[in-house]
Length: 80
Image 1 (cartoon, rainbow, N blue to C red):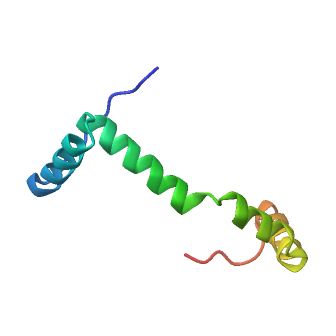
Image 2: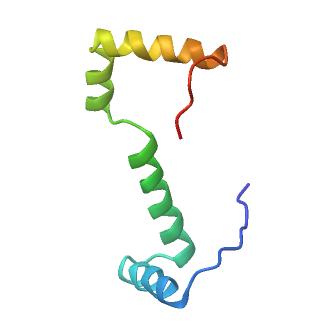
């Protein structure tokens, strides 16, 4: 079920989203959702090529597993 949120935007930011929505024949809500999802996918997920490269790097996979184990055990240093 869709959720409703309140989003506060400066006038100039709102106008940018509105203009982009009009150009793309979308509602402003759909434009914001589409752009936010695209940014999330670009920032937090890998594409098929990147995933293949990561999984084929045996040393990297070994280090990732070691780091994951340390995190689960609450060991190691956490860097912000």
